[in-house]
Each structure stands twice: as structure tokens, then as C-alpha cells.
Image (cartoon, rainbow, N blue to C red):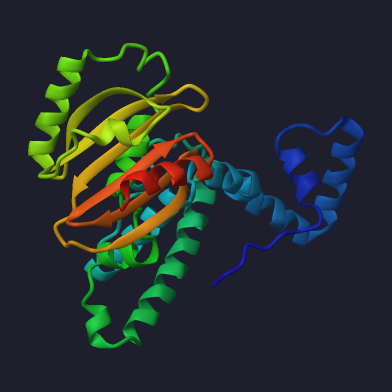
Amino acid sequence: MAEISTHPDDSILVAYLDGELDNRDRAALEARLDAEAELAGRLAFLERGGAGISPALDALKSQAPKARLDNILAQAVAQHEAGNVVPLRRMWPQAALSPRQMVAAAIALFLLGGIANEFIRGHAASPPAQQAQPIEQAQQVREPAPVEDWRQAVAEYWSLTTPETLALAPTPERAAAELSLASKKVGVDLASAPDAFPGLSFRGAQLFDFRGKPLVQMAFLDPEHGPIAYCVIANPDKAEIPPTTEELDGFTIVHWASGGQARLLIGRAPAERLQALAEKVAG
């Protein structure tokens, strides 16, 4: 891959081109230009657009974070394989580039083209089965997207809950109706769940849908540690998971699975507190 050369007099030549030299320095440089053909040639190169390459490349990098560069690389590979050329302004539609920045952009795309060629040559040496993979699949292998599970969904929702959210307790009749409906939806009796947590005030049960499966969230208010939720969701694969403690989005979570149901406790209480509560319902 070609390298961008530099010259020890580039800074003064650029200042000359930009009109930033005083009369004495300008006259001294012009005398050198008359006597030094190489220096005059360097000036001509910079005047054609070479000046400002480094600053322009820095500007381009600030406008193109890693995700965009990865996307440009993928496009370069695709276009190479298809035999097409993508115009610069389609690849960087937001950029309003000066002529010298356009030179820098061309160099950047040239360098990216070199990277793409190396990538393609590497694929040419790979087994045919790997060559046949679409570029989208190759990107997924290199940078797998995070997979949201039901615990993540609960944590994101619970982050919106405050003690004020749970300020009002349901009437006994409403609480019984909510627990009855939730029990029917998940196929497990939850009527006695609030009694399993002494010291916590039951604040109601809500039904949600997570990817086609009913998810029950029972809200409690701990006078010391604030909102705590006890959640139950159907677990069709019937995997048995012992109580497991983890940190997620600033919350402590204790989760487990048994009897075709997955369950969790979530809150900002210490892990020991939630583990002790889990023992009361995990048996």
C-alpha cells in the first residue's frame, strides 16, 4: 500500500500558500524556490491539493467513527466484487468537503481500497464455503449484536420505576383480581406470592407480553431499598437454572428457572437482600 510522503519544509510551504508568511520570510522562501527545483516541485504538489492532507484526514476521521468506517469497508468490498464504483458523496453524504479535503478523502478511500483488497485476497484463500457467506453474515460474525433477553427488558422497564410510582397500594379486592389474572396467564398460582415477602409492601401485579409469552411483574416497595419486582415468565424448554446473581444496568438481579417457569427478583437492594428473598420462593 502506498504511503503519503511528507517533506521537512511542508509547514512553511503551506503557510506560504495560505498567505501567512511575513514579507521577510516570503522573500527568503521565494529565493529558495528559484534556486531549488525540488522545493519548487513540492510547492506545486501542495498547491494542487496536497496541503492540509493531515488535518483533512483528521476531520474525516472525526466525521466517520468506527461503525461508519466498517460500513464503508463493507461497501468497498461489495462494490469490488460487483465491479462497481461508489461515488464519494454517496459514501459520505453529510460531508461538505473543500478541494484539499477532497484530496484527503480520495487518499482515505484509496487506503480503504487497499484494506478491502487485502480482505478480498484473504477470502480468496479461504475455503469455498466461507467465500459464499454474504457480507452481512461476515459482519455479524465479527461484531455480533447484543441479544436482548427478558431480564434486559425487565431492567429497562424497571429503571423508570420510583417509590412515587408505587406510592398507592391496591385495594385487597384489586390485588386479588390482578394476581388471579396473572396466575391464569402464566399457569402457576401466584395468589400467595405477596405473603412470601414479609417486610415488603405489595403494590400490584401487571401483565406484559415478551415475544409472545406472558410476563408477570409483581411490584413491591421496600422501605429501605425502594422498588423491588418479582417477575415470572413461561420457560418452554423447562431448563433448570439454580438461583444466579448478576448486575444489570445498575440493578441487582437474582434469577432462576424451575417447573417450566423462569423467575427473577430485581432491585437496587444489596445482593444478600435479594438472595434471601429468592430463597423464600425458589424452593
